Length: 386
Image (tube, rainbow, N blue to C red):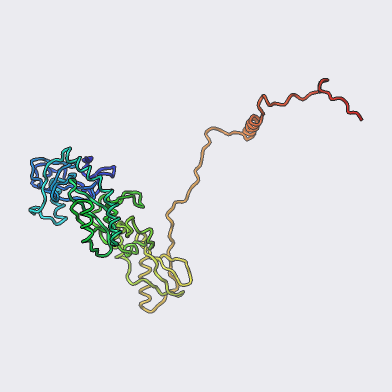
């Protein structure tokens, strides 16, 4: 039923695709707000929509409600109410006065929840069967998820396809097979990862399955600006596309790179043409390499501009005059220990060690050798006959 933490759940399980209600404690975010539109999430937060509350009930975050569906009803969870919904409507370009916005019917009862659980249990089997049917019809598509309406009258099939797919015959087969009204909805690889969820290489839950709702295009240029190696396996996320987090710090890098000189990919010196390999925005250095050498020379921005000015005048400097770059790691100093117990002689330690070893090698009492002494008369052997 939700933890009602206004989108700040620390468990990371019920904040999927949520919006933090930062207006919850303000006076105009009261139950008597003029905004009668509420945000409702479905299928564990993988999809959300907006509905008009025409009832006299006051709903809070986490309440299960019954809303209008396709030729029936559906059940969802309230995620946002009040004035914050108006901001979301403006963000998604939805008119609050639109008469086509579906209505809230009632608070979900036990019978509604029981019917929903029965129909939701059919989704796993529907995914397996729908994939088999699409494969039999030789359609180049992948069924990612099947969402059945709470009353079981409609099913939405989310699929992934690279090209346009003619699924007119497929809809007829699905309608006969599952006895529902079929809706086909195409999604991308990023949307599929958001629905499936998972843990990223950073050790945290995927951004697309928690808070990221807008998927912007990502290309390898963002990695080049940040001096990242173009390694497809490391730069790709679980969706198989480039990671969305490559765009998070891109603006900071672009702003920092504006102070670096342009057209400085090559510099002419006495030893040859130095080629630029990377830029360090944190230390304001530009790294060059000379031909027939693997050594890297870090130059300051001022030095690069001076060499470019000399090259434009037809002069060639003798050296690059690279600066020394420290690793930044402090030198480890061995700690000085103070003997507060006192001096202990080595001889006393050796004696104690010898005593301990002798005790460890001593045989048990029942296996000790008999005392060595003169043999008794009974133990003497008769002389050997010669």
